[in-house]
Image (cartoon, rainbow, N blue to C red; front, side, top):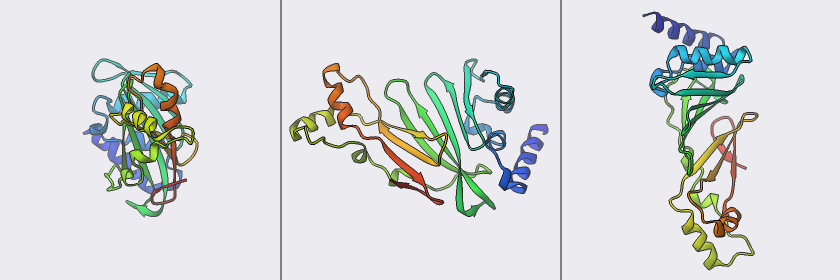
Length: 213
């Protein structure tokens, strides 16, 4: 009951003070189901450590170590374990969502070599939003044939990159997100051509969606 009252109080605080809402407030109110093995106490400890300029490490519910690397007013990045990273950014919206002028973008990245990301959106009260960034970006956007590369070689490099795994990265400083292809066991002889083919795509938030730059 005490935990329920704490979360309810945090939600009321967010709704009442939207202009000064910060990432730490949203993080406190995050449902346990989104990061199942980080408890409410773990999240509060992260915030306390960061605000005290201490190393932000906690023992998670699986007995491993989770680390918060960055916590600002609008951005957060933490490692749940060595193969799972979460980035969160508050984004301003042109029309209120749940009576608030910000929404939450979450990027959850899995893997060590060959990372893949899942991008999700929520209201600041953690209601899932039906927004799909996949409609804006596709694998073809992340590859291009250099003028110096013949078509046959380009097709070979495209095959080397399969299976296509896409990593997303939220900016800590601006309302932008980038996408690029991950690499899995690229032969050293092909690495230069692979890097020449891969393209980093940056999208900017424009009040209701990410747009290509």
